Length: 133
Image 1 (cartoon, rainbow, N blue to C red):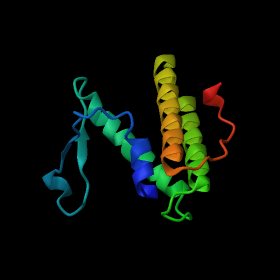
Image 2: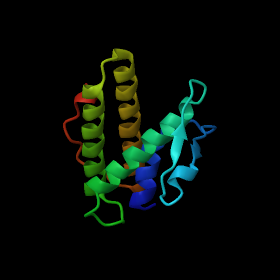
Image 3: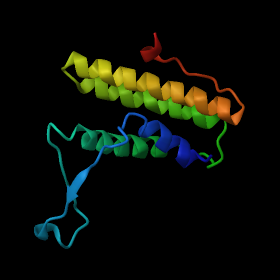
C-alpha cells in the first residue's frame, strides 16, 4: 500500500459503488481539456465522485513533500488535511443537515485512517479533532 492508495481510499470512502459521473465535452471547448459534469437529483453519486476528486487533490497537496511509503507522519498529515477540509466545507454551508452529513463522512475517513494504521502495523499521533467530540 502506498500514499496514493491511502489517499484514494480516504477520498472515495463515501462514493457509492454504483455511482457514475456523466461528463461531456462540447465543440465550443474543442481546443481545451474542459469537460462539463452533469448532475441531476437522481445522480447524487456523480456529485460524490466530484467531491472525492477535489478531496484527493487536497490530500495530495497536503502530503506532496512526504515519501510515497506510508508512515505515521503521513497518517497524521492526512488526518490534519481531512480536518481542514471538513472545517472549510462545514463553515461554508448554511444547511445544518448537510454539515451533519459531512461531519459523519469525516468520522468515516478517520476510522479508515485507523484501519490503515492497523493494517500497516503502526500507530500515529492523532491531532486535535473537533469533529470527534
